Length: 183
Image 1 (cartoon, rainbow, N blue to C red):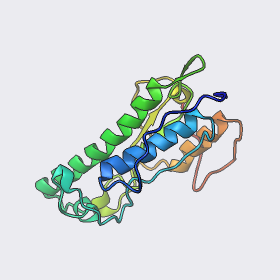
Image 2 (image 1 turned 30 degrees about the horizontal axis):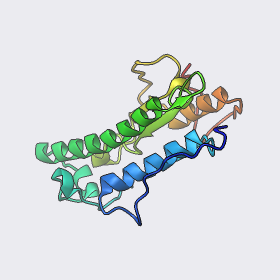
Image 3 (image 1 turned 135 degrees about the vertical axis):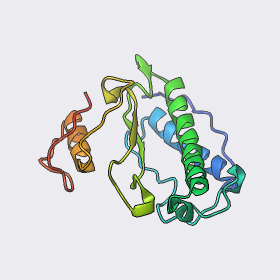
Image 4 (image 1 turned 120 degrees about the vertical axis):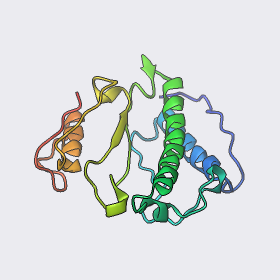
């Protein structure tokens, strides 16, 4: 409970024209919702896998979906990697904001579990394995590690493990075949 203290917000009028400002604003709203203890759960899709959005602000004028099907062309792969780095840089700002916001005996990040990922590992062939995910926050367990699962491990196994962490263990989640434990 934050009491009656007002949280300062610098809110634009309308939707920002800049994609980066728009995403930043939505991440700021999520951080404020955490800080105000309005929620402890959020989902946010920065771009759909079939997105035809372009990103001229970082030199990407071909649609996202088009460059995800890189056809093994080095220049298209580089454009897709640049786009992924651009999206990740915005996520990093959210993580930094959560880390810089005090809460109890630590920070909002210390008391959070935040995932960042994609529905595709190799969009060129619509391949979901191995699916890379970034996990941040104090609830992730031992930090600064790289976990690798069997190439065909269902993502549902991770969600079963996460449900366990929060005291609501389902026996299955989606196509899960077991559980991945973070802590």
